Image 1: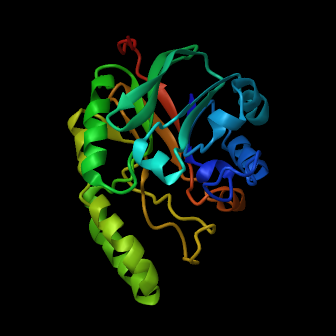
Image 2: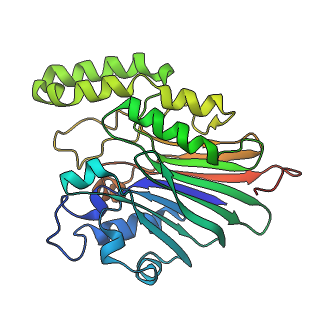
Length: 279
């Protein structure tokens, strides 16, 4: 089963406004999602999709049999005028698909009923400003996670793994030196992400990082300041021991450079024979 996760940057709109009826980058996003060739895709930051698309619209637009879309329903974001959202697309039959309240916002939980095995999938988009809030959200979400059953957790976690902090700090120092304005805006936020407590919490639940290489997913060429490549890994897959992940990639073709400021992650998930079925 090929699974992907992708932050699509303000739902494909040019910004968090309510003027346009159709996302301006919808053609680019459609091409990018097709290029992933995934059986299941978790899309993050699908701003206004619950307003402008029906479930049938999403299935037709992206070529999937099933779709589930929710707003985050986050009060802080609503005060700013952009509540954002999450969307799960699948060609694999899904059961028990639902929004899960994780402290201040929603996540998505579902069971994927594959021909050979069942897998629980959780799609999350954690707070972008505070590790304290993210930890609270993940602790709430942990009640949905059973590492004894085939499970994958994907999404934009906005947290940085502790083992990656040193190398990242070196790369960021060079960027900050040449872009002091960026340093003032970005440095406090990234410093808080570098606490890495969300990642540590997921690992304490018995889940495994699907990409020990720690390949970065942010930013792409859509970032206002031109960089040599992606620097931050904030998009993750964690999986239970009964799930084997193969062929993990961070696609970075021109298609993905144009479609969003994040790169997607994609991987093959195989359930070990004899694993307990998700309940």
